[in-house]
Length: 119
Image 1 (tube, rainbow, N blue to C red):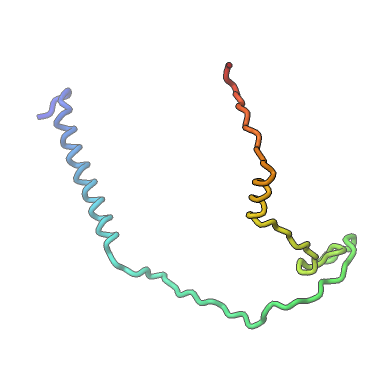
Image 2: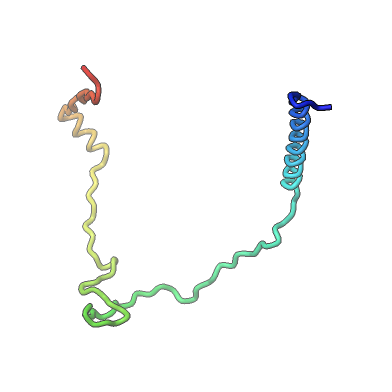
């Protein structure tokens, strides 16, 4: 018979029940993960074939922004393909290394910066 101050037996019985419940939960979830069941809601992906390809078309005519129309366009709008881009001139890395070697370039040493400390 359990007495008021005797808690060791009740803790042992509760601990045993918790271990059994935990083992049951782990076993059931492990069994569920081992099942090789295909999902019931699986669908196949069908890619849509667009018969009309992209074509270049002229832009809309400029309109005043003060008139309430469903479509408004800014003046001077032009497509990206019509914007002239200057070609990049890149210097080969070997030429850069040769320049540094012939000009005896010595970078300045970094100075020590102490922040928040007392010197």
